Image (cartoon, rainbow over all chains, first blue to last red; front, top):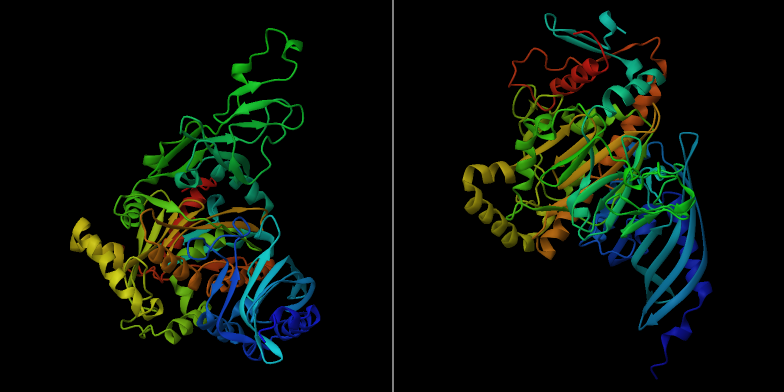
Amino acid sequence: MNAPVAKAVSRAEVEDFLFREAELIDNWRLKEWEELLDEDACYYVPPNDDPEGSHRNTLFTIADDRERIRQRVIRVLDPNCHAEAPKSHLSRIIGNVRIVSVEGDLVTVAGNFILHRYRRYERMGEYVGNLRYILRRVGGSFLIKERRMILKSHELGSLGSVSFIL
Amino acid sequence: MGPNGSYVIDDHEKGLFLLDRSVHVSEEVLRREMSNIFAKCWIYVGHGSELTKPGDYKTRRVAGRPVIFVRDQKGEVRCLFNTCRHRGSIVCAEREGNLRRFMCVYHGWIYSNDGELARVPGEDAYTEAFDKTALGLKRPAKFDHYKDFWFLNLDPNAPSLRDYLGKTTDYIDLVVDQSPSGKMEILPGTQEYDVAANWKLMVENSVDDYHLPSTHSTWLNFMKNSGVVVEPPKEKGLVLPTKGYAVDLGNGHFTTDNVNFRGRPVAKWIPLYGDAAKPEMEAIRAELVTRLGPERATRVADTNRNLVIFPNLVINDGSSVTVRTFYPEGVDKMHVTAWALGPVEETESARARRLDAFLTFYGPGGFATPDDVEALEMVQKGLANWQDDRWSEMSRGMGREDGEQLNSDEFHLRLFWRKWNAMMGAAA
């Protein structure tokens, strides 16, 4: 009776989940966003000159474990987080979503993102890249075990700080 | 501008120091900085560890110049101008890689990785006056290193690198002493972030400990949340939990020198690292004591130092070690490049701890650097009123004796500005 879970996961379900996550992050509803994270969730932004590197031996832009994510959310929601006071206006489009693999209850997902960021009445940057998630199937939905946001630009300089949740 | 074409008013008698804000907004000042400072000083290019094998190269812009930082086939580290001798194209467009030869795509001139001109298509169309041996890629007038930190100098009459670095080598040595073999390496992964502010504001910010409690209150909260005891200042005049000094290293170089409270991968444990890290960190410290003696081991492990090598290299030995350089892309924009540095023989777990500690504070996704960037950009915006609000107040700590100047004073910032002012041609 161990039918492959793969058949039980549809791209539409994954997309709905990613779109829901995007809505929460873009609107700074980060406490609700944290409810989408598994207890051992990780969040990575690797450097664009070594996107396949490991955060244990390569300098990333962001390499958070679950506790660091919790601290990051506390920090960016604090009015004294000057880099995000006033808050950036964020709008991301997620597309080209595909299910890469399914192993047991773990679903590996790939996709593309385009994120526009506005702040202080200026356009701050256009963050473009690939996303790679490991989701855990829980009931009728998912929890995020790992989210990896890989920036495509040749140089990161013009993007400035990544002081929001990418 | 003040008397004698000076950009500062430096009144020792009254204990006042004022800086003309035109230095951060004037196009004319930036033009003269290119000739008087960036074309005269030793400017950081890269670290030898970035080029491990013959043929390894990195292309970068240094002092505004496109260069190839490369290890040639004989193993020599070189700095070549990335400009074809024929008609001027760059000869290497990749950011990094490994090549024996660089080929100009325009007409196919080929240079070996020591810069010599190796091949010219259709060479028989030239007269005998055409001297291939004199047409190698040009190089900066001087190129030298101290402990694998490589610098160029565009001025053939410049002093030697060792004379230029002067007493800063004592502080570079304190960083390098983290390594049992005396060998440090740049770790993979580069951080880059542009800041919409004048480049000199980053010099100030890199060593200005006065700003820490206000700019970085969320970082201090994070440290507290992670179990670090951040005690209120115990002495009058302090703004930080522990005492630190600002130290004059001559030639416009300076450093902070602080008793650590924020943890150090080498080798001061804080709860953030987790209990499992304790035995390894004790072993790292024991090795320091055995190799360096207890006094020097304490200097290496229990102090953090933010070192400025004039004009635009910062080595911060704080929450981790970062090498940071920045270059103006206009009066109100700079490009910052930052790397992590660690001992070559570091274990996998110690390396991971070093990188994790780095990200708690530094970089575009760190818990502190984005707020520094914000502060500098807000300064630049405020400076738009410079013509009606001309002078920045930088007198903090002027009443204190030399040697007693704190990291949270502005003594070291004044050292920078005096040197900068003199190089920009102000009469003393």
